[in-house]
Image 1 (spheres, rainbow, N blue to C red):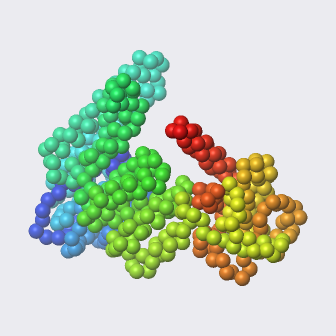
Image 2 (cartoon, helix red, strand yellow):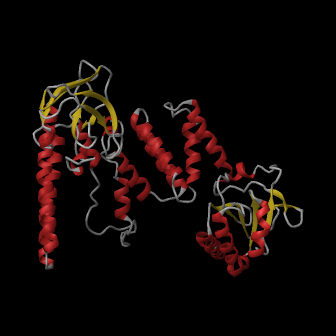
Image 3 (cartoon, rainbow, N blue to C red):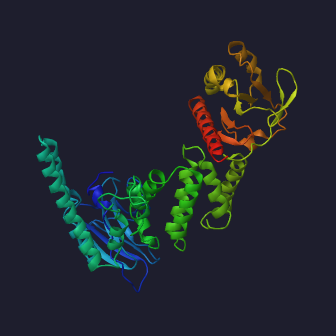
Length: 485
């Protein structure tokens, strides 16, 4: 989209909240240089451009006038007038019950926009003007910073920049003070980030410097001013970024930590319609697509504790079933669970071998196909690792050929895979795909001596790392036991 307003401005805008006798809106748009073309009304939903959601449309008449209206209750927020080229647009503030006229000239945007019947947007335009000047000064200071030749020059630019930033902060604070119940004030509060107190900070003993103070303080106060009960904030481009920073950058990537924060966020938004819906969707989508091992446990947790308990009321029965089916496939093989049994016949001997009965300090359970291109590359690498170091660490490899067993002989002529237990399930009796959520190959699990799952969906790059971590953990636990004897 053609950007006709600074994206920085988009993240700082809002509308005053009022009580109206009528629901809906009526927006008359008058363009001096537009006719016989479509115009669209759109809004944000939790995240910034380029994602916007169309809400209404109309056609300019021969005089450049278009009217969009609705009698349905409308959730306020930052809305967008988007022209037919899908590139030219501008933002404005819309509240339930608004009846306004907007006059503009497309070729002169973003300047020259006039509102009638909307004091909120008059204030909004004043703020946009302030931010435009602020942005210009920041660009000038950036040029000064790049041209600085001494430490003194750099320090001088930083001082000027901090002074300008304080003006912006003071503008927001003054606005909040004078308009505490407005939507713009709610957005200003939502955009606030904690200011960590300066100076040295000590632990409880009063002498040891607390190296985690800044992190802990920032995280603890991150949501202080965010109004989780104000659904209008979902129609701003703020919330997605806030969630991403808090969950993916400030929360430890461990299932229990993620689950704790998810519960807290959902508790805060409980009772709202849009914020709760978006929060549950975002948290679920985030862990479902995470590359971090163990996040599937969080997915199962969310499904079992929210979706299956009736909280996702917006989903159809069919869509809800997809979540529960997916969780049911993952639940048996999450990290920390005892691995489900696989008891299949070894291809070379015809002897049935129990995976759980295979004694080993560590077991690599691999589902693969000799006709899979990635498997053909990955298996020899793992075999080299096995011979070089893994076997000496007590690793045994139990594999299941998922398909194309006929190609195995040709594969083994080139790569022997000596010492591997290679099984197959030609009659499809073991249900290994469901037990281990095998939808692609290779699928690799690491089990410990008790056959507890310690790693899943691995490859040659991280198998050794996880084993080293488990070895160090075991060593540390033994040392601690020795100390307590």
